[in-house]
Length: 298
Figure 1: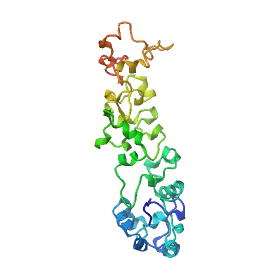
Figure 2: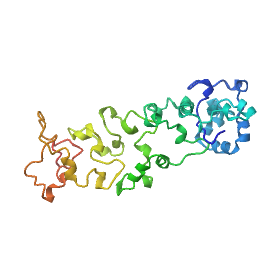
Figure 3: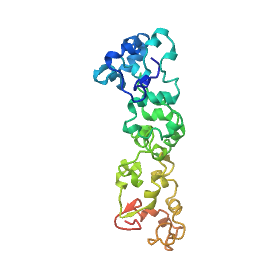
Figure 4: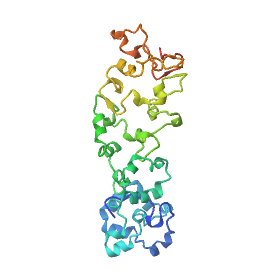
């Protein structure tokens, strides 16, 4: 057994193919778990404590007494010749080959629905880069930090999602196996309407509203907030609320814009030199959307 084992379907029978009946294993080149752990004792002990170890314990899964070969393929020839070329070593195999073994069991799981579309797949990041079978991997945040060190720095800013305190994890917002959303973001039940996955936690900002703030529907939360962390309160993109709002509301209203709010100039009564008007949300409190006022007033 290798240092990294990615459990899932015998490669020799094709991705997703059913394993041979238990009684036919001996004649199909299988050595059995007992023969594997005779040489790979350390890996065998660690594997037995993991979730995948249930293959060895539960006869109903079809791999009892042969669970090592569920991932590595038939091991009889490997054992007799003691050569690595006769066994699938996931840590040394090409990511595409190793992933094919994993997806033999996991390809129909909801978490892997976007695997072929995700950036991890496109970047040839194999399953074994994040997952372990002989031993459990660290918490998701620690695993992700191995590659995404630039994101770790963002979480250290004064105002950030509390991932460093264990309150949230990367996988709460991102699907590491891939999704059809940008950056592998998780969606919600209303994903088709461009509802951001942020609303899984921030449900108080969820609509539908009678009067919606256009960026919420068209651009998502990132149009105003930095998703990982910011030097600004409320994780805003700009230090001063006024400057953030005026990025959109500093031009004349678009022709045909009946509401006069999309891209509208602040009224002349708003003297932006005065502190009173520098925080737009002092009056426009329902900035994410309102049921009673198109200007998002109280």
